[in-house]
Length: 136
Image (tube, rainbow, N blue to C red; front, side):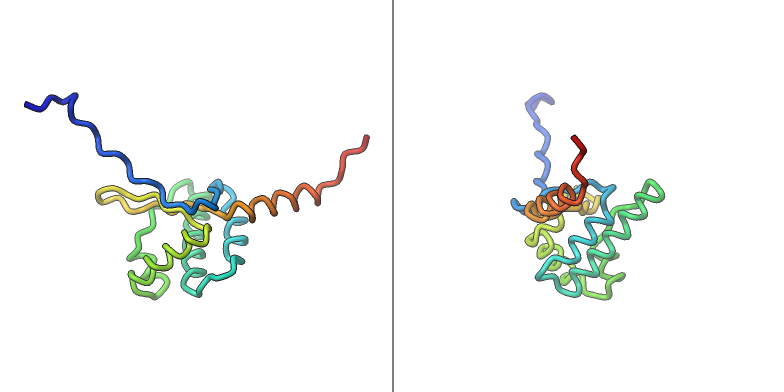
């Protein structure tokens, strides 16, 4: 007979994130949107999805809460088929501007802000160069 101690919980699904990407804090959603929208290789649907995700993070920042995005809702908002949205989301992960934390059961996926490591490094270097040197 199976004992309760013998049953192990199902392992969580792995985060879908490009190896060349780094996650961005949710509080920096405006800067993320500016840099992610300038990424070469984006299609029109990709840009519209980025706009929807940035708007959702703006709502979270302003109100403290916003529900998770569902593919059907994004498709209706963008005016595209759900399959096109799924393909665009995969393309955004490939371009390292988005991470996807899979949902479970009836919970939808969570879309996480990400940028390529080289973009983050270049942005940080530009910030350091623009700050005046302290007087000695």
